[in-house]
Length: 140
Image 1 (tube, rainbow, N blue to C red):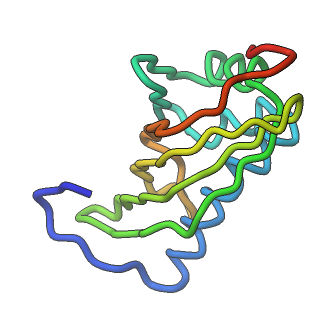
Image 2: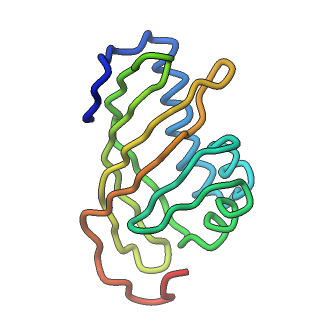
């Protein structure tokens, strides 16, 4: 979490709201609810996976629709608030593919933007650290 702005821990209420967004990411994409999942990124949020950047509700929904079915398991996030209510989050994850029980693991680096009583993703960067070979249905 490299930032030049001073960071502080969130209040319990804001931490709960930020955590709700992080949990919703996994629940919505794992249940194949592409459009509600895409809305977690608000109007201008960005998803970065490797060298690919996805922005906008339609491209994000298409990404979710084409994603490999499986289950995301996210570790507890480190949450820090900066000036303007922006939250930076870092957490580890494991993804289990449905078709072969293969694993993908890595880190999420998030920037969350306050929106009403909660947050949207301003940016989520997925840093894949390990991946088992795909044995079966292939990736989508």
